Length: 100
Image (cartoon, rainbow, N blue to C red; front, side, top):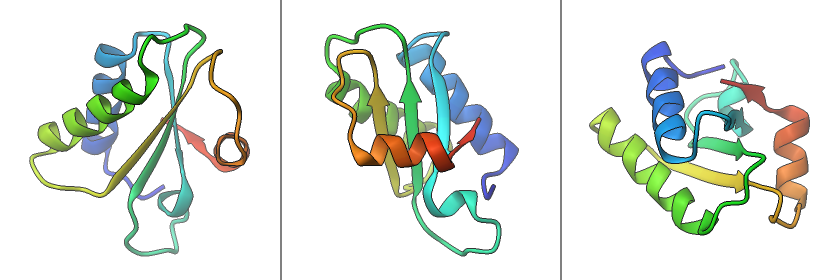
């Protein structure tokens, strides 16, 4: 996994504060591959609670992570709650991702 411990801590803290303490964070995509270089940070947030505005939460989480890191980092955030229709990207993230 190509994320520093500081970046992992920021991500976990922002998700806990923005989505809730029960939310799980999964890193997927190129950052899981230690031999790759570059790439954005792809995150899947899984929660058992239905969120009122999941799309808004995705944007809020991404903005707060970037703000707390102090630099613009390409970042994609997806939220999977019980009301979300599962898409192939969700299945891929669950199958290949790494929990933070």
